[in-house]
Amino acid sequence: MCRILGSFAAGADRPEPAQLAAVSARQRHGGPDEHHVLSGPGWSLGCDRLAVTDPCGGQQPYRLPHLPGILAVLNGEIYNHAELRRTLAARGHRFPDRCDGTLLPALYAEYGPGFAEHLDGMFAVAILDLRPGRSQLLLAVDDMGMKPIHLHHDPYDGSTRFASEIPALLAFEGVRISPRDDSLDTVLATRTSFSTHTALEGVSVLPPGATALVRPGTAPVVRRRGPHRTTPVGDTQDVLRHEVRRLAQAEVPVCAITSGGLDSGLVTALAAEHARETDAPPLHTFHLTYRGRWPDSEAAYARSVARRTRTVHHEVTVDPDELGSLLTRTVRHLGQPNADPITLSTYALFRAVREKGFTVALTGDGADELFGGYDRMRAALTAPAGTDWAGSDWAGAYADALSAAPRLLREYLYTANYRAHIADQGSAADRIEQELRSAEAVGADRLTAMTAFETRWRLPAYHLRRVDHLSMAWAVEARMPFCQPSVVTHARSLPTAARTGKRALYEAGAELLPAAVLRRPKQPFTLPVAAMLAPGSPLLDTVRELLSPARLVLGGKVRADRVQKLLARHLQRPSRHDAQALWALAVHELWTEVVQGMRIPLGCAA
Image 1: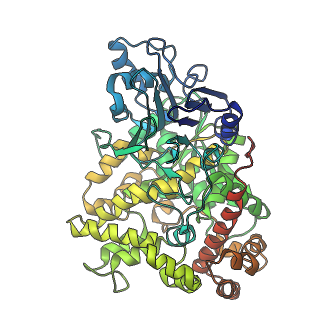
Image 2: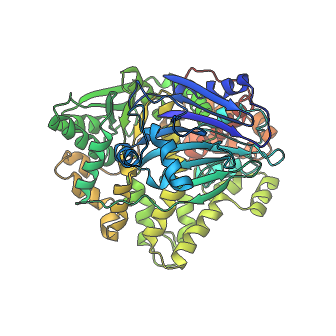
Image 3: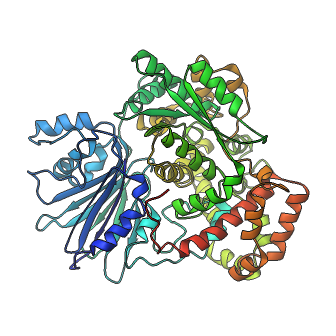
């Protein structure tokens, strides 16, 4: 697991070492163990390494003596590297160590741009081919988008630059900062940027399962690959058990994140089972809560899972007075706004994991998207064809359920000019509605249409990018069994009934988890934002300052008087929906401030 960076341009000078050092410094928190950057006329390639597989080997960028001119860097883990190594060795390739990424130059030499089709894992890979007559850069990410690559292509000089994190990318000279005009609407409508967009003009993210080919002086050509081929064997529990055991193997300490819910509970139970059967030390589990009494605490459920699975349990308690500073840090690390309050919890949780000495953490991310776990999915499935659960278009109601502020509230808050601009350009919510309607119109059943949208766009942008950035802020590798190809293939093969409301997962957990966890209503791991923004609460002053009329009037996108009315209504009668809208507005406002300072190196401290 690492942070990677690089640049590629035609006929350009060698990049300045000081510039490359600044880029690396902004993401060094994710790769504190080693740092190497190579460069030449018109190119650079670098890595900040978090050593997990073969910690004593695997120096990046990877080079093999018998393949001069091919360089590679990797962020992530290649789980089938031993199998690939045997295949490549049979073809005459030799490797100096056991590191998973060492085989990448040989894999590319054998399969060319199709090399990524052979990788099973979570990965962001860059390969630079400097051989005479073949000069090109290839970038590839895994099928689910667990490891991101952020790109900037300059149409004037033809240069392409990339990095694992946006703040690092912005440290390259020539990458200009320009927030998108629709960034506020996107945050309110979908909580973060989906698709290949980020909140910054000119900065894109490689979509899941994609490979980008860059030739000198040309823009990246992006193509989506077919999914990694796998044949899962057994029922849901068997398939998940296989992946948990595979991902629990590491040469560094491994733990599990245990929220107290079904998804992380299953991962915890199977990882603890694996530890017992292999005579390994007991599994350590981590759960985050807040000092004091707050609604919706899951601590008791997490303790119940830990007792049942016999783990060494760590209950991490955060002082709510720290949340204001955590907000600034998470916005800076993410590089773009994400309106889910869970960002603060995620950052604090992985900090505790690292402080206790763990480098790898197993999580339950991806289960809801694949196994129909969201309330909005169940509501949409009960709506008659052509209607939603409120009697109008189901796709419109589904998009509203994704929002931080429903469409009517957004239009109420916007200034006349901004409302007209969004109406003219179209909202991210409009594009989601259209995609859902189009899928159903061509014959996809409604659950398949929703699952395809959730896994292709929302999961990588809203969840996986957040988990990647905030775990790596503390040099922790988050591994996600539910996002592995065999589990994805298995989930998609199930009948609709089995993947609605996570029925297949409840059946898998029946013998593994406490009855109280199986019976409890669904609840996301998050921060109790409505209570945290109530009168006298720790975050209220921070949000008030960010939403001051002077700030909002300067931005010109929302009516300050109506935002103040929304805040007053929430303070009089605290509401989760109003609190979420206020939180999203505040996060966007803070991001616009932070992004202006991204030319100042962030340093190595998290």
